[in-house]
Image 1 (cartoon, one colour):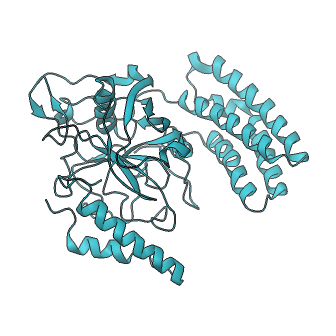
Image 2 (cartoon, one colour; image 1 turned 120 degrees about the vertical axis):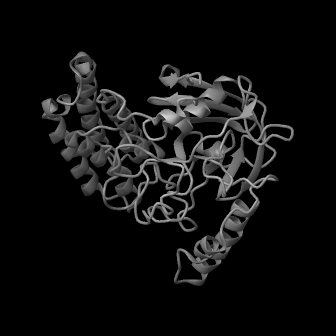
Image 3 (tube, one colour; image 1 turned 45 degrees about the vertical axis):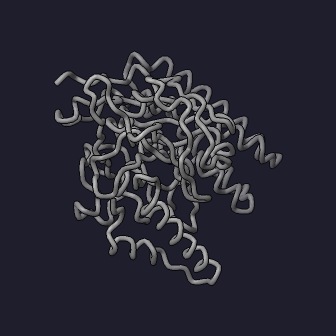
Length: 384
């Protein structure tokens, strides 16, 4: 099969432009990798209004943060709390700007001093638990402030991680109902009406990933269903390119995807992309083909370990079981504006196991995969 039209490939080869020789060489490497991924990613030619919105400013490269921003909620104080805590790591990287970190924590503390503004978005039956999380957040901010006084970087990072985990729980508690109806034409496919956490054991170590049914219910539902069936157990990673991707999901034999035993047919999954500001995903067409050249997906390619549905280039609705982990390299595929966003469906992110994913190459194996949280969100296909 042909896997990228020539004009699209030429755009990929020249975009983005760099001003230095070093950057030019890296761009040349990107050319090689892109030719590989889009022209020969496997023997069969495979490649890889919502309230959800990313904040303005620098692109976010943390998968956990992207998942938080993808939640269909609308509470400005909790988003400000999240942003102030996330900014701490940026300030630590920027020559440890202790004053800016102190300001971030002061802002978080002021927000937490007005818990009613946050609780207003939490359903009444969940508010007692939310109040407990808010109290824990308040005391946790105080603890991190003490670590800032002694400039203990490790304690600050550990405290920040704990605080953001609590923010995640708080934000998840704000989701009152599933935000849209999936088109009826996809009722014959599994759907994930929420999120699920997957633990994947490989011969190099363990991975944890969260798949997002709020943004990609059909794609994520298909994946969770296959995990539940044990489809991925024992499968090899079939292709990899350093700093770019590692792919799996190609079953043994002549088939290139999942054959549903109930129908005896190849299960085809549509291209599914939720763009920022949209109420529901776009199906069966890339954002570029839809004329939406500048629109960004809610789940972008900006994080190491983005989980992406592979598909034949010429068949946007031809994905099935093959997927790849995107190994984000900011100089090769800059976050926020690259030609992968909107062409392929990201449906989750790695949340634990970065060092393991970084070691995986073609020939390594998934020993087992299991759903450890969120299986209740899986909706079985309706009989046709």
